[in-house]
Length: 89
Image (cartoon, rainbow, N blue to C red):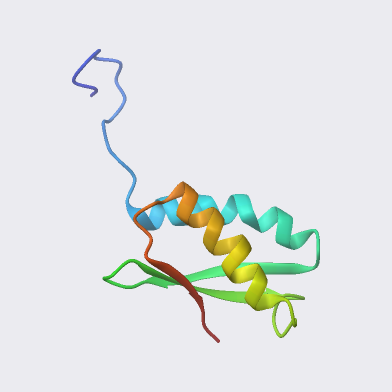
């Protein structure tokens, strides 16, 4: 229960993984509109996020730009605890 108002809602803050997954879901629609996708692989202890590019994004010459200027930028805005976002195979 919420300590402040007894509204019945649990006062639980999302984990960094939940925040990242929510943010990826928001990014996913934009990628899918171009035939691509992104999958969360994991988050290291130092808050480095590992993702796997899929579909048209996999092997695309612009994938590095999509990673740094798109996915990483958006994730860091929504989840400032993130150190870096890297693509893995």
